[in-house]
Image (cartoon, rainbow, N blue to C red; front, top):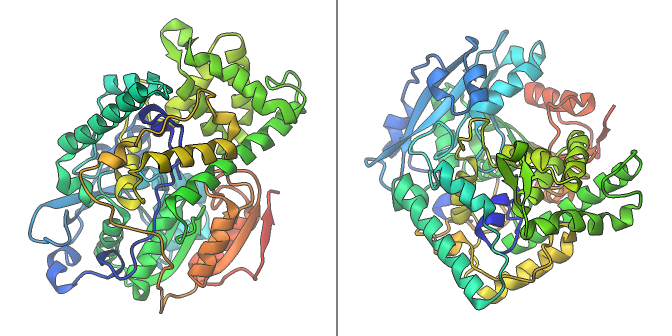
Length: 519
C-alpha cells in the first residue's frame, strides 16, 4: 500500500491516501459477470513464450531473461458492460511447479500500481527449494493499466515528472490554492488524453480487476483460485472473495485494510501509522552513534523538521550537483525508508548527508518510491496509483472537508507537516473524468472457505487493526506478526512463512491467536 508521495507534488498537503476500497455491495462490483456473455474470454488459451518483451524496468529486463519464466497476455473486456467492444491485455508471468502440482498461486504486490509480474520473479528466489515452488505454478499479473498490461495508464513524461517532484504547492493563499487546483486539473486531463480516454480510466479500478482475475484463473486451468495479496493486493483478494466466493480455494491477505473504513478515516490512521514508524526509527537511531536526529527521541520530530523544512526555500544539492533534493522528495525518501526497518540505517545516512548539504541518499530513496530508474526514466506505478485511487476511493470535492483532512493528518503525523499552513486545494481525483466505482461496506462472502489474514503490529502503511477487522469481515483467521515493517509473508520469518505455506498447500490454518516474532 503506497503512501501518496505523488500527492505531495500534486496537492497542497502531503496526504496519505490509501487506494484500496471494497466493491460496492449490490453493485456490479460485487456481482459476478454473466459467464455466457464472456465465454470467448473464459475459454481462451494462453500463448506462453519468453518474457523479455514484458520487462518495463532495468531490473525486470535482467530477471525476466531467466528461462524458468514464461509469459503471456490475457485478453479481457475493457468494459465488462460492453464485452464485444474494446479489449485490454493483462501481462502474466509464470514459473512452473517443480513437483506434484496443486494449481497456480497468483500473487499481487499492491500499490495499487505495482507489477505482479515483477513480484513473482522476485518471490521465485525466496521460495526456491520449498514446497510452495514444488506444488504451485507461481503466477504474477500486472493489473489492467499497470506495467506491461495494455492500455497502459500514462499521465506524465519524464521531464514533467521532474517538474512535479520539485513543485511545492505550499501557498495557502487563494491564489496558491487556485494554482494548485489548476495543476491538478491539468494532470487529470493529461491522464485521460494519454491513457486512451475516459473508458480506460473509468474501468481501471478494483471492480474490474477482480473480474480479470477470474478469467485468468480459468485460463490457467484452475477450478478455484489460490491467491497471495500484499497491501492493496488484499483489496483485490477481498473483493474477489465477494464477487466469486464459490471460486476461492485459499486466500492469504497480508497488510490489509478495513473494507468498512472511509477514505478520510483510513488516511488519518495511515498518517498515524507512519508517525509510529518514525518514532520507532527515532528511538533506534538515538541509541546509535552520531544519530542525525539527536539522542532524545521525544525531540526527533522537531529535529527532522529543522533538517527538512529549509528545503522549501532552498533545495539541497544531490548526486554531485547534477540534481537537487526538494522538500517533497525529502519526505518521500523518509517514508520509503519507514516501510522496512532494514532501511533505517540508509535513512540515518541520508539525514546525516542532508545535514551537511548533500541530499543524494534521500533523493535516491525517493527515486525508488517514485519508480524512477537509474537512466532517469519513470515507470507508471504512481500514475496508475492515482488513476486507480480516483475510481476506488471516496471523492473529496469540498475544500472545507479537504482542509479538515489535512489538519487531522498533520496532527497524526507532525514529522511531515511543512509548517506553512493548510492548503485546501482539491486533488486530481476531484477533477477526474470518471466517477468512483466503489464505496466502503461490509463484504458479503457467504460460501467463502476459510481465509488467512496476516497483520503486523507496527505496519506503517496498513495499521494492525485493519487486519483484525478484515479477518472478522471475511470470517477468516488472523495471524499476528510483531514487528515494524509493511507486510511479512514469505520474507524470511519462519513462523509466518511456515504458517502461510501450510495453509496454501493443505488448507490448514494456524491455531487461533497465533503470534509470530522475528527469529
